Amino acid sequence: MKEFVIALIAISFTVFIYMAAKKFNQRFPNPFTLPLLVGTAVMVIFFVAFQIDYDTYMIGGQWIEMLLGPAVVALAYPLYKQWEMLKTYFVPIMTGVLIGAVIGVVSGLQLAKWLGVEEEVIYSLVPKSVTTPVAMDVAATLGGAPPLAAIFVMVAGLGGVVLSPYVLRWFKIDHYLGKGIGIGSASHAIGTAKALENGEKEGAASSVAMTLSAIVVSIIGPMLVFLIY
Image 1: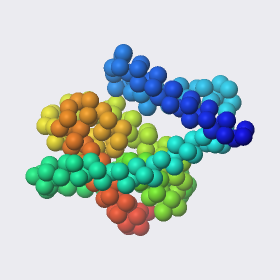
Image 2 (image 1 turned 180 degrees about the vertical axis):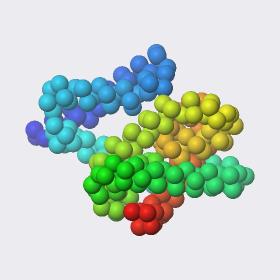
Image 3 (image 1 turned 120 degrees about the vertical axis):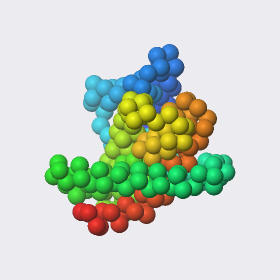
Image 4 (image 1 turned 90 degrees about the vertical axis):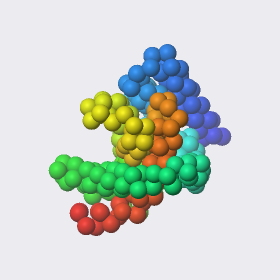
C-alpha cells in the first residue's frame, strides 16, 4: 500500500510539473523554456532539496518507463501517415537520415573515447540521437545502462532543440525537408515536437526522420561499435 501511494505521488508529480512547464513555455516561448528542459530542472532541484533518491522516485517512474515499450510500436504510425512523402523524397530522406545516424553514433563514441569513460557509459552514449525506448534497448543490447542512455537521449534532444534554430540559420537551411530531417535525426521526439510547432510539413519530415533513425541506429549502432571501439 505504501509503495502504491509513493508511485501515485511520483506519477502525479511528474505530470503536474510537465503541465506547469508547458504553460510556462506557452507564456514565455523560447528555446530555453522548453517544457522538458524546465520540468527536468525543477524536478532535479526538488529532489536535491528534499533528498529524494532515484530508487524512491522510480517506484512510480517505472510505470511511466513501461509505457515506452508500446511507444516503439507506435512509431510505425507516423511512418505510415507520411508514406507519400517518403516515396517522393526517398533518396534525400534516406541519405540525410543515414548521415545523421552515423554522425550521431560516431560522435558519441569519439567523445567517450576522448574522455576515457567506462565501457558501460560508452555503450549508453552510442544511441543518444534516437528516441528513448529504442535507445534504451540498443544500450542494453550493447552492455550499457538503459537509465543512463535515457539521460543522454534527453541531453541530445534538448541540446538539439535549443541549438537547432541557430545552426539552421548559420547554414542557411530554410527548406522544410532539410530542417525536419536534421531536427528529427539529431533530436528525435523532442525535436519533432518543436518542429511541429514550426509547421506541419517540417514536423512531418522530422517525424519520418525520427522513425527511420531509430531503425537505422538499431542496425548500424552495434556494427559501428564493433568497427570503431
